[in-house]
Amino acid sequence: RKEVEQDPGPFNVPEGATVAFNCTYSNSASQSFFWYRQDCRKEPKLLMSVYSSGNEDGRFTAQLNRASQYISLLIRDSKLSDSATYLCVVKCSNDYKLSFGAGTTVTVRA
Amino acid sequence: GAVVSQHPSRVICKSGTSVKIECRSLDFQATTMFWYRQFPKQSLMLMATSNEGSKATYEQGVEKDKFLINHASLTLSTLTVTSAHPEDSSFYICSAKEHEQFFGPGTRLTVL
Image 1 (cartoon, one colour):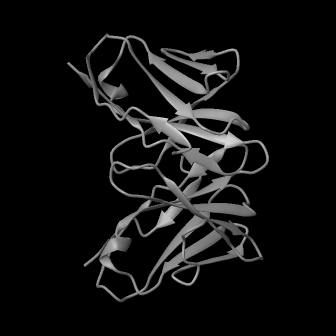
Image 2 (spheres, one colour):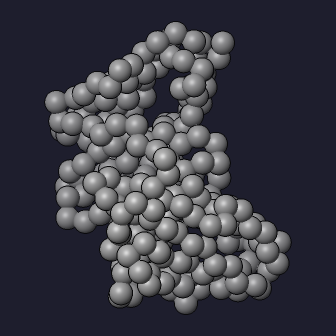
Image 3 (cartoon, helix red, strand yellow):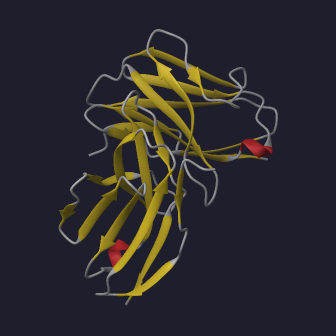
């Protein structure tokens, strides 16, 4: 079983729509959670950390459910520039290693 | 601006040759850097943890004699793919940790 699993998508949505997707992780000892964004043929860039109580950053909302071991990302009022692959990333507390999901592709159309 | 650089950004080589990729932290010192590999439509897979002044720690299944890592200074780690084969063609990304992990722009290796 993969450490981090994501629905690969693609999610094709019109501008202005809301899109949401989840990620599940297998290691119950995981302590830190992140969403990264990766554009085609580019390096991943941190979008936001995910906190236990859930958190928002502008149009992006992240939630963590430890009991069910999943993380979610919701994008409101989608923009064309939101088109990218979103990587779910999990880290255990005792080292620096990051475990990456394969990514969820979102395409926002005009 | 970029805090981690990689060079080269793209390399095409013949099968059997060796390729060196450099990863530099630009604004901070990194005692630990990480090397990842990403095949198309797949997740980043950690290959090894590069430790300044000591041997790298390789993940299971990664051949240390094929992927040579040298972390000679606090701002530079190199990955050498020795005797490259077409199946080594991939996107190689390094990262360095300050308060968060910053990724280099990646190196796309194509082995003919």
